[in-house]
Amino acid sequence: MAITASLTGNLGNHMWIYAITRTVAEYNKYDWGFNPSPEFDYRNGIPQMDFMDIDYGITHNYKYNDTPPWIENEWRENYLHSQYFNGDSVDYHPFQPDIFEIKDNTKLYIRCCQDARYLNKTDVLKWFKIKKDVEKTYKENFQNIMIQAGAEYPDDLCVLNVRGGEYKGVQNLLLGRDYWWRAINFMLTNRNKKIKFVIISDDPQYAESLVPTGMKIPVFHTSIGGDYYVINNARNLILSNSSFAIFPTWLNEHNPYVIAPRYWARHNISTGYWANSDIWTFGWLFLDREDGKLHDR
Image 1 (cartoon, helix red, strand yellow):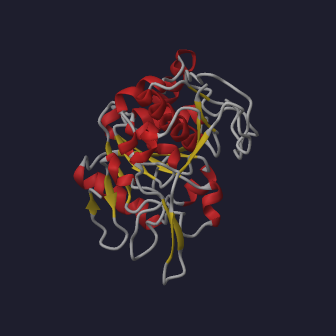
Image 2 (image 1 turned 45 degrees about the vertical axis):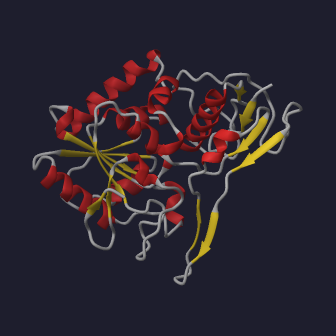
Image 3 (image 1 turned 90 degrees about the vertical axis):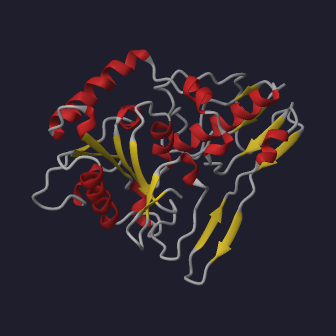
């Protein structure tokens, strides 16, 4: 008998669903478990957290639309759907402390929950450990990336995590070139005028198109785990509005200097409103599209 949730979407989503479910279970001293095979993902059900030592608890084979026989209750994340005068439509997921009051034998339906107030970082750090047999390779890749970027020390390197892929078809999500180069200028003025830059991206061809002619910024995509490692060990980061980078940045133990897009999934909208959750709770600096300044929320 346990609480459970289905791993849907891709790596960032899987990690959120896992962390929220296990946090709530351990808070209430309930057993917990998952079907390790995700659904509605890019890898046809192959676990994307396979580069980490993940404990799936009491494993089972029930899918998203299934109700395991021991489940007696459901908890569904609330959201506020808003239609704005500019034609934009957005779902916002407010912080819901009632999740910690669920009964045992509950199935959680988590849409987003991307809010640091749900989690205890000390616990989550223990759950998301990179496997030792791949960590050596990831470390070597990171050192090679530093060399190609011309950075002698990690403090002299800034990693841009550019999201392309399906974002290219969504105007409100795809961050424009202005965001990246404003953030780069802040890094040069606020951190180190000689800092070197490198791009980690799921879409190297698109990322290369963002680099101005004559400027050297190497672009890399090694693997899901390899890219995660780079973000998790970088000392300076400029993030996209993708859930992929949230955990490796938040769990980065090097106290990185982080710039992220203000309002996250609605950075591109001039009026400004957070979507899909309150990402400001992670304590980063957020670059505003309109005033061009850095904000703490």
